[in-house]
Length: 557
Image: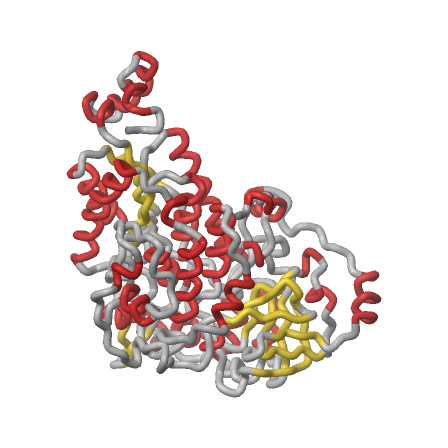
């Protein structure tokens, strides 16, 4: 059942391969007759999103054995974005998506796996697994680590982001420590609508995660039971040769975009969906996000768009309940990984409208979950999460204060140099400039902590954490390193952002910008060796997914 086929595994030519697998403990009968399933595991002891994945991987392997397959577990890199929060190493996070993808790709090609059951939870790691599935195009699925339990501090629901606010507000060490003890009570992905939970749920829509399983709480015994079922199911998918190229169509990714709009998912999802479309040769662009932003309003009240957590959303039906609410909009005839269509899958689901999950005709906001912005400051497009924008800042104008990295902007905020009415311009933090398109958690958290997010705008060629909120515009493209207009902004220039109309403009004439461009000199890459340097030299721009791959646009369909 491997790529080489049972005839090869039973032939003298495969003797050396059989020897290696026998030496690793596999029996001759298993090697010769059973499908070989790779089990990439992103276990990492240093993060709650990954510290529990050994148990989940064990359940997956039990399911594979039970269904007549051979599970071969191997480790893949994992990181947690909260560890490098506020330091330069944050720029590794986006790069990790491509490192994970290539790690899975390399091992799987060498081992000639028939299928993959990947174990992942967090941010760019789970996105890297999805990307690997698309690139390898063998039967594949991801078993998610699930969601962290809700934190509770003195009777109030809290999530990880509350620590970032508290540490800036001058409380005592004792108060901060008490919050630290309560905010993350279990393993699992932090329970707000961050990148981790956004991508876990989107895995169901993209037919890479078994329906209804993505956001099962990490500590719920159901997570283990469903992991075992997933192990059994990947063997079935291998035997039926059901591949990502068959299960992930253009219409599938359109459903993912609609879902992301409805839940106000992390802005990072745009990068990952676009990267997936390029891997599969599908013609999905930012224009599709713009189109669905006009049709789909936010109907999910999970932090930061509302007071609820992913656990609350799971308790009212989770991903499938959201898709039921979107029934009139989604492509219902596209397949799911279980063999039914999406229309058939959600046909008998019943869900009541609530403040956690509303219906389309009674949305939580008269705004989409994500909005694409264009203008002379970002001709290739930028992105904002409208539901995280404070009231009164939906449209704002202000004078620019420019900084060439996140740290310098943060220091200016702490000195009191940033005042209401300003627009922070943080540049040279994009795909090539950082390199790695850093998440600006340091300066954004400082704005929130000092209550400046209600009166100060921020535009950047970098990106934001899924936890972030405020009048913050990311993915400005072309980025500063490539000489985009953001590189030419000067202190005092007037910048206008209109979230409703989708505009980000710089009030400087074309003639003046041309004069400034003549003086602009491209800086040297910040990293001269290692994976960051390789990333900077091969990465595509943000509007193409920011992936480390020299894509040929001609292969897209």
